[in-house]
Image 1 (spheres, helix red, strand yellow):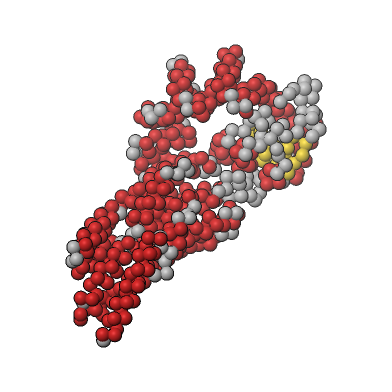
Image 2 (image 1 turned 45 degrees about the horizontal axis):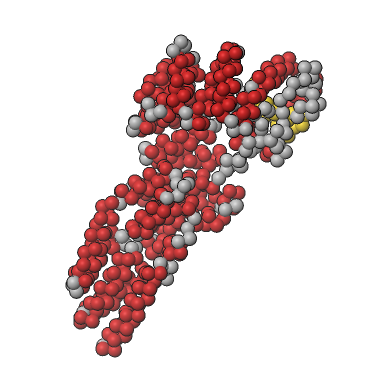
Length: 548
């Protein structure tokens, strides 16, 4: 941002985003009085976003309260996320509120400055002058970062810190952030260690706690956080770092308490709500998980952060609670909440843009709801085409795994689980949840496999009666398992010619098991086997009918 000593605001592109016409005119008047000649304004972030291109705005004033839609903090987050503002631009948040939650929310997004209404023309002039000088001082460092030359930016910041001690704190913060971005945590540790050897400023303690956490020195990180919280119990950075560190050492209950406390103090942070969800899921705190994902979904709507995954994760969290629900009333309530969320989601723009993906997700959700209501056959028919055709989107693989586990299709579930593990976009927390579900069913799977394998052995020995008993036992643990149902049919058909008086019972069992697999979109191997078994059944049933 170049300087003009006579008129630093001349020809600067200045944007005001505020829904109050009176304030727009007031601020514009102040700026014109200070020499500005290129001022425009918009009533909302939505209106301004389409007009802002990178490097096209020199100074942007954003009011915190913008009426309906995203607030000023969210809009500035979007501008940074979308890389719409150059590092040489000046961003200023304006607010009429001075409550702790609002101030913390403003500071977390790191605008270049913030102003609390009302303010005078003199104050505005002083602030703009300081910000302009600061941008000029750090021009080369900011340019190096924009060009991706992070190591060069570090050297520039360190030189400024040495030459201009009054700016050293700001420089060291930026250097630590770059070290974090580069994964050079030991470098950050050494830099901060030198600073803390002579003084213990809050910012350096905070960065050191974060560095220790990154280096897996969790006990040290917690001790530093306790020191910070002793100075200020509302230090949300210390609360966050301590919560994450405790979670790493399996102190889940305290970790969850701290991150909830942090969210209550500063509820508008997207990153903090994600941390809340991460810790809640790691500790199987399902009510907290639903709350966190619900907040993320609400915060993301209508913003650049909007993504269909927030819909998916919110509904998945409710399914986790449904799976563990004990009473019929609780199950019914959760089922209704899930159904309502699925209906509402269909009107969300992120869903309508990805209709095919949501249709897959919705199908598996409906199948899981059918299982929870005891309708296994209906659930299996819903998902069979996707499983048979192997055409499932990677985003919905976790839901297919859960549905298949619910149905007792263990082989298919584990095959889908392995496929999910191999994805680059595999989410660690989701994978952990799937593996825990798999482990929780380990006894069922073992019992199923033992009975099914024993049934196959007996069948090969010609002991069809006992083979049938084993396959029936296997289906008690996995009532919709296609392979075992076909095994049972095959054994029943072998026994039918020898059944005599029991033929009617065997025929009815055959019809019952055919209903489990008929009309299904089966994998090719199972489909061929079913066709052969139906042919054999029809032939034997006809002979039995003629003999009677």
